[in-house]
Length: 158
Image 1 (cartoon, rainbow, N blue to C red):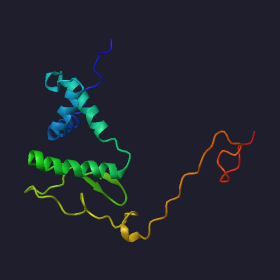
Image 2 (image 1 turned 90 degrees about the horizontal axis):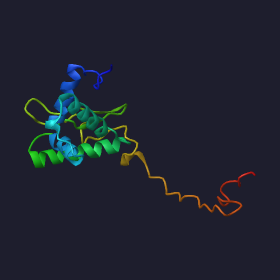
Image 3 (image 1 turned 45 degrees about the vertical axis):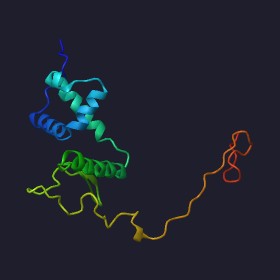
Image 4 (image 1 turned 135 degrees about the vertical axis):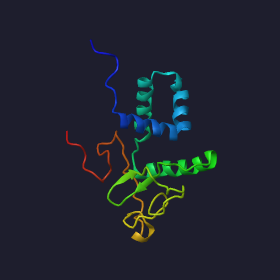
């Protein structure tokens, strides 16, 4: 008979998830409370599964801009509310996007080599890249018309 648990996670993975949860405890604990969960009262395997779920959901983002905005907000919030550095600042690179898990020096000073707030020379949205293209309004659509897209497209063939 199969046990109700899946498989025991690798030690380093479990430690990594727990370190992330402790570093972001106000967020992780708040997520649990909102869902009616008491992490500290769960079996360790269940607690680790919940933290793993929170970790994956927290890292689901549609764009690099969304990741950067979340990182900027958390960086300011953790400094203002908890008087500590946010360890997981987003780092934008020209070839890839990733989180940086070591953004401070040994003395706690933020690194200044292109982390949050840095300017990426390859950024296509940088102001020095040229003029912005003009707005093109959406094609008007009339489903009751024999030519529903006006003169932009040919009518559907029937």
